[in-house]
Amino acid sequence: MPMPRWWGHINKRVFNPRAIKGGKWPVLTHVGRRSGVTYHTPLDAYPVDGGYLFVLVYGARCDWAQNVLAAGRAQLRVDGRELDLTAPVVVGEAEAFRALADDVTRPPKLLRITEFLRMDLAA
Image (cartoon, rainbow, N blue to C red; front, side, top):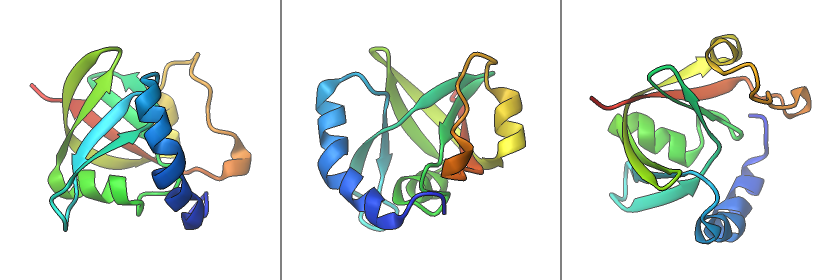
């Protein structure tokens, strides 16, 4: 896991609400796999052919990724649009980097990020 879980808990409670309120970040809406509660998570969302790619800063075992993988779908609010996403799959660094545009900055190696979540735009 690239970033410590305790930092994720701080992000979830302190920084994420501020990022959502600021309205500048793409926001992924997903449903809790156990609670059924609707969550809103600000994330970097990178457009790729037919969908979006998300950097799994805390790894594939983070809550939001597990929720999306369990549900098989989510909604993304980006640039004032609501997009339905489906078919989530965890992909490795090589596949993710091939899908990203050349001008997209890759995560620093220091963060040791090796997992990404790919989702397709719903038909």
